[in-house]
Length: 206
Image (tube, one colour):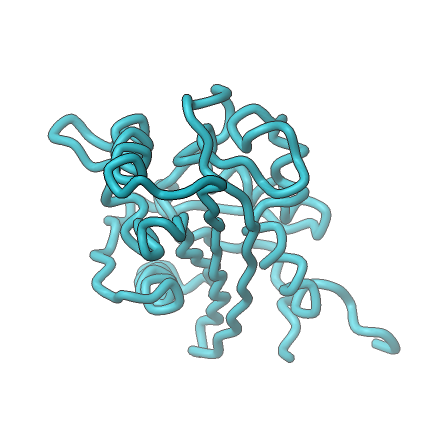
């Protein structure tokens, strides 16, 4: 596996919550994270029906625009009682005429579970796919997930997205109630990033 030896990485996102999470996760490796907003890049249209496909779209657009290596993620919440929805459409569920509102998305998720009379526990998982793309076109893909269940009403004001209704297995606090440090240590992106360590850490004997 190719090692990433740069000190600067473009995080191909416009989502400030994701950017801050990646900054915290990558800080121990001495990597400075830039974002699409730093370069005024437009948000590419995500037209794929898989996480890896959408991550590739974002990474390729970022590299083409800046010449920097880019790390893109596509992530989402899969609710088993909704046949895996919202999945790759997780952010779409939050779209409103006034912009993204995840309270709308969370309410929709619970309402649809209620409409289906989905049995408890209403299991779900957060999934993340990271795609690291070098300017020469080489790429590496890393995936992570965190199992849990959907709870109601919403709990907590931290985190972002669907965090206030996601209770990870083995915990009493939702992602929305956890401190950023606690969540970052166990999030689906953290799991994927741990699988990415072979690219980030010095190789033995080097």
